[in-house]
Amino acid sequence: MHPVVADVTARVTDRSRASRTAYLQRLSRAASELSLRPARTDLGCSNLAHAVASCGGSDRTTMAADTGVSLGIITSYNDMLSAHAPFEHYPAAMKQTAREVGAVARVAGGVPAMCDGITQGRAGMELSLFSRDVIAMSAAIALSHDVFDGVLMLGVCDKIVPGLVAGALSFGHLPTALVPAGPMASGRSNADKAETRKAYAAGEVGREELLESEVASYHSPGTCTFYGTANSNQMLMDVMGLHLPGAAFVHPDDPLRDALTAATTSRVAEIAASDSPYGIGQVVSEKTVVNGVVALLATGGSTNHTMHLISMAAAAGIDLTWEDFDDLSTAVPSIARIYPNGPADVNHFHAAGGTPFLIRTLLDHGLLHEDVLTVAGPGLRRYTQRPEVVDGRLEFVDIATASGDAAVLRAADNPFTVDGGLRVLGGTLGHAVIKVSAVKDEHRVIEAPARVFTDQVGFLQAFSRRELDRDVIVVIREQGPSANGMPELHALTPSLGVLQKRGYAVALVTDGRMSGASGAIPAAIHVTPESVHAGPISKVHDGDVIRVDSLTGRLDVLVDEDEFASRVPSPRVSPEGVGTGRELFAPMRAAVGRADEGAHIFGSLGHVWDKSDSAPFVSHEETR
Image: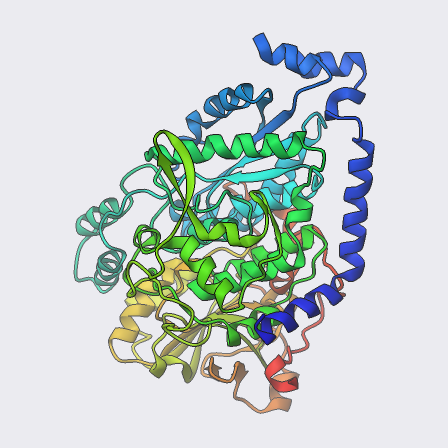
């Protein structure tokens, strides 16, 4: 193993020892309570009657007997959203596959699935991050009937997969697999789309041309093709062994997709019926989590996973931190160029070798742990093969020794850059993350006066008045989890890009999110402590000089230390969220944790957090 990967894994394991032990003990108790298999055999007659009432035919016979595996399907299907629409027909196909192997599969419940692409810049976006925790709880409710021996989870996009994984881990003794739907075919290139957005922001084209560009980009069922959080999810599920090998990026209409879905159903039934069944809680180990971080860094994946991976890990009793990301990023090479880190989309990545090639080259260079448990069986090496339908049967075959397109995907010994392109920043403005894989070298350090806003609208109005045509660090606060649910701020991206194109030194500092579409603008995001907790960002004034230095990992306001410390935090400007369902989420805003602890409502692992604490973060760079 690479020494940094080994050291971080050891550190995560040591830090998590008490919480992970307690979690595994809980799984052991749950498994022992279900030693009489299948799970429903200890139900009372009335309980079992309710559990069987909806079944017909052979399913009723199997469920009423003391033999035969019961699989629960949890689905994020809705026909409004392109990524989830393909799931409409999955349950029927999975039920038929289950019958063929002597099992019963039924839809145990559904989970909400919202689209950040629709809610960007709108009030509904304030529910987005919290939807992850709602999904986790919804999944737990679906499984609470306690009649299932295995679980199949249908999900793809941003908050859906992390929420499904967290919910499944609360039933971690059950064999579980994630089932993807795949990306839509490539449409208009992401680079062309981005240029049209910038032209619209600059007033050079009208809404009609912008809409034509967007529709040509997002044009059919399937996941959006840029490498945002949705596709980062799918890559992670492959690398973490929660899909069958190579399942992530097969098109929804490809016969291979149906074959993989059937094989996943059969495989979960097989694990559940075996003499040594194992659950998702055993699959998601410390080594699995580190593998996920490594793969995220190697591919320039979504910054949302600096929260989602921490939250998923916590659900398995594993204590992951931003500093683990930071240290791994120094050792993990960047070997993929997928938009916004390059012109290619995920279909091009898949064609170049995709996750099997990615996993193989990272394994061969000691950057991934091979000795992990997966849905497919023990050992990650089996994930270096790609699936194919041969003579009507699913087979896993060896991939080519070289990348199919070195402009998109490379071996670890021939990287695009020697580090993973994600840095953790620390300094007098707190703790933040910055994605630099698409940031040019000349923009890696920005020092400029601040212009402070408390929402996106104020920024866009100032931009339209050309008040920001200068070197500027845009500070947008009151956008953290406790303030308003931490919405993504992509409405800023085109305008910031225009300022950069005009030749100005530009950066963003915010306690909000930018997610997987973070691109060429240096953006210090997820600033912690957030503004409404009196974090240092709440004391920044217009004109204060700020330095965002992604080379040394510093985020500082360059004013007199004593004068800055004596400032009173700015009073909150943004109102409490009401309307569009936001008032229903007030308890979650009150309970949510810090961004660097996963920004979830389920409590922290090994951390003591006082919401009044505004002490600046001291980066590892300063203590190493």
